[in-house]
Every structure is written in C-alpha cells, then in structure tokens.
Image (tube, rainbow, N blue to C red; front, top):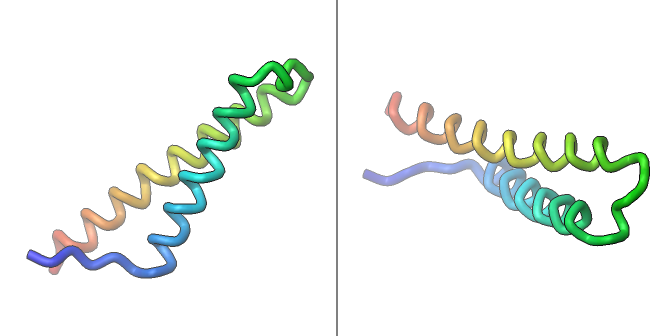
Length: 65
C-alpha cells in the first residue's frame, strides 16, 4: 500500500514542526520571561495540533482509496 501525501501538506507539516520546536526552545530559554509567554505557548500548541490534524487528514485520505 502506497501512502500518498501532497507536497503542500508535507511542506506545511515541516514548517509547523520547525516553528513549533523554535517556540518550545524559546519558552524554555531564560529570555522568555516577558508578558508574551502565553502567546508564544498558543503558537506552539497550534503548530503541534496542526501537525496532528495533517497526519489525520493523510490517514483519512488514504483510507478512502
């Protein structure tokens, strides 16, 4: 069984992973003791949730074929 992934979805997942890792790294550093910490946490959560939803979309699309 060959899994088909569109290029746009794959690029989106890679960028979400990179930005999510960057946001988590920034949260764990000492420089993130400002008032925008909750906003950075929301961006990181969105990025990782988007990765999970993209994986779900790939699974459902390949299940139909």
